Image (tube, rainbow, N blue to C red; front, side, top):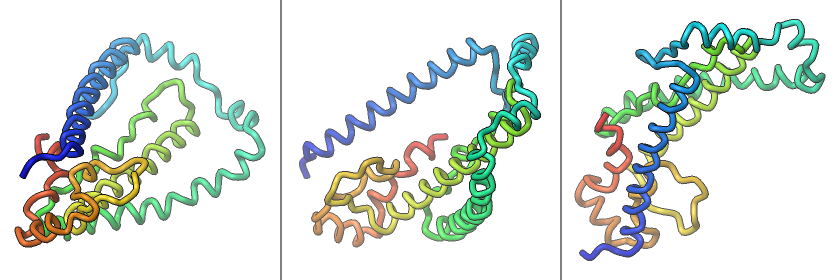
Length: 207
């Protein structure tokens, strides 16, 4: 079967993404040198002299609290209340993938690739700012983690593109079958979902 122009474009997009990710890694390494810190087993280690300089930028708790807007104080309980559904989502999708993905033969999503909590290590943040950064890192990380699990689930059960353009598709979407391509879909089912659904784990399996 001849490759379509759309498939060629998708391959070019993936190649471009890989190049951009490599450039991003180089830029991140440059930032580490600029701000004098290193990553060791997932932990951030700042140069002592530079960390001491950062502490001079820390705003004290009393000054931070008294300087906060009333609207910020009043909405804080609502913001923090989302910790409960986020924790339930985290637990639910973790249990789900460890049971279902193992049964279906789908590669597990590494939670540590998405839930990244490290900003509390910054010396220029006070305790409240550190807590907020932990909360934001956790919340956004859990949503990204759940999205990847949902994407791999979709790739296994229904890897068909939508008729409309998706604003920000998940990583598996590019390998989905074309909307309206009944022959390819039935062939995929007949082969026991052996192709297309493998797309989401290509980059993960190489780690």
